[in-house]
Length: 193
Image (tube, rainbow, N blue to C red):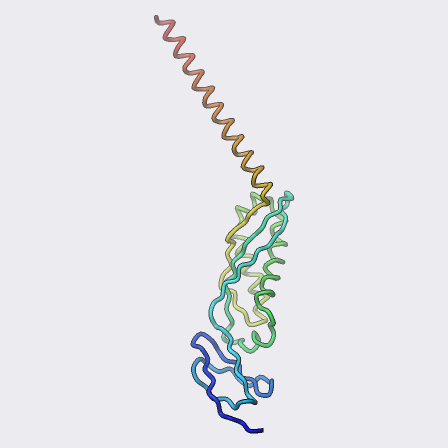
């Protein structure tokens, strides 16, 4: 079989995986490299930091359904490019599964109010657990952020009604207090006259 010496260009933000007859041969840095085509092929692996948004639905301790949106920033470990390329088929799906598992193990232990107050703590736990789980596949988790936590729409309406009723009650008390002061002042003015 004739072989041709070809130039393979790897983007500046990538590393190249060289395979010879389907078997891993080497990792090439960004720039131009020569490979023997058609026996050798080059696949690019992005070394950029990537953001993955994961939406997880779960229930709180007080049986409120919440949708939690988590942003995971990750990148390929430069020392484990080969592991990343050959061991992971769909990194986004796998990271999402780990995030879902972590969120669903933490949120049900908290009430809705506790979950809202613990967003930073939850983000730290998610980052730690996902980083530990994905490290074996050559993925470095840079950061995890809880970007949104939304209860079910009916719960939101009920909470808004409760808050509105509380404000109405406080306004009524303020009006009654003002009316009382006006009545006292009016009586004092009549008594002096």
